[in-house]
Image 1 (cartoon, rainbow, N blue to C red):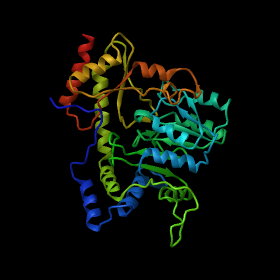
Image 2: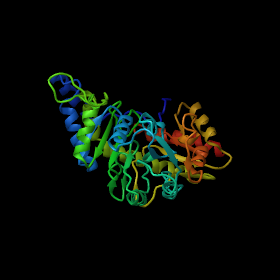
Image 3: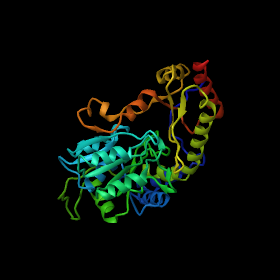
Image 4: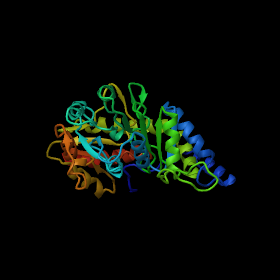
Length: 368
């Protein structure tokens, strides 16, 4: 039996990616920039309905530059969800800023509006980082209203939620800045890469400047600001252009996988699948389940592992991580409950229906 992966790169059957890569080789626009980068930015912006986009080397780089563009510096406070991957928080420390972690809402698994409101009563942050984990949208109406009232900019980490809609609008386009990732496990990939979007052309132009080592417009090499080597290569952007063509297919398959799990596993004792609210059209990047009975997440992961099937725990909250545990967390400990009871199931779009049946059979045996 072949190994079943949690989520792995899935190139198009049509070979769209290779067409763009071959053109980059034919024209010798290998690096640093070229037509693929420019068109990937344009096509991506068109897909998510953003005004401007900058293709960067990673989602982490996009968060870092968004923080700089928002004016975050040493000693500033940034509100971040605690239930996320560390790449959300690391750039806050790059800027020598101070993260304050916001707890989760059990109804969305994302940033709790109530906890966010409580944090605003204690602190004046420079920015609020909102994450849409596992392709589930945060409650953006309430979060946007709170941040607008306090006149604090939102940076959306939509690394996991490309294609997810909140009330018909793409996640990543509600805040002043939106961040996306094309890491190898994401719904589309460029092997590594990211995108930053904004309604402000001035800000995106500045981000491109910083991302190309802040090289001034001079005949010689001149630099008046700190710069970064954060631009996406023309070859990788070609992969991204090809992947964009099949994004809707990938979302459709992810939904089929989720619905299969929901049909087969929801009836198991003390099991529930991740929440899908009426205002949320997820991309179902990873299908996650909670088990609060005698069968524990580790039991499921070990059983799957014996069958050469990948799975993962839910994100360990940032305030429980050794590197971040000294920072404050605001709100009821919902994230800890999700971490203790949650497991991410294989959600690879290359899985067959036979693969899904094999996964479900392995899990159900634990309840027999």
